[in-house]
Length: 340
Image (cartoon, rainbow, N blue to C red; front, side, top):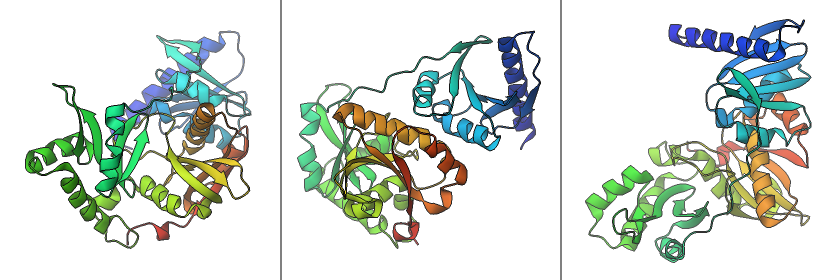
């Protein structure tokens, strides 16, 4: 760890200790032992874990819970200055006692669970582009009301509204900057032709066995989901369709678990959450995803977390075992979907 990193860690530890001591009061006799937590600071007090999440707070419950389980704690207190409504909502998915505290000017306040986002439908103008996306050879995808086209999970176009005229249009490219650059270079081509050329180019690289290339390094988890959709039996499903993640992605370059729903071979409703690497927050995130699907569809689903076997740790399994409702891991063989 760098000198600046060490200094920051020390300051966060001091902050956590001050918050805990102030909260417990002067008559508390138990000792408070500081400890290391990668995303902030942690401490143990009379069998309870106190974890201050200072980085990536919206994805902080999983790392905090794994830390508490490894420490052998009987309960967990999670502290953060932001996203505590999300953390409190996720905490309710577990049988393990978890309390989320919002840090407000040196005071700890019990966090209130924030509801999941409402289901959003795309505008009719944006939905109309789905036929054109398919005509261009991409897969139409709708998440949180946003219409896009993907090639094996890689976004290659998106329906947007013109910032000046408000007119709907389909832009080709990955991300806002790439779409803008593509329009400047190829704006004279019909949209379906431009899209088809991009789709053909991406397909050469985004396939199992392809040599490493930027097109197959981006959104590996979505490429994995695309392959699972083509072979749902891999996760014990008879059929699967893409559905919304619990909250919208903020950047197409971000590695974020993705979601599908469908039926098991036995006819039960299932939600499959897919990730391609190590993710200490995968269990709370996946439980959030199931809750959103069940809320929208009025179902009670079994959860299956599909990820590489090498990244499913014993503590991951223990955390999932503490969750309410049927849930399990599905071990994936990444050699079937990874570039050479």
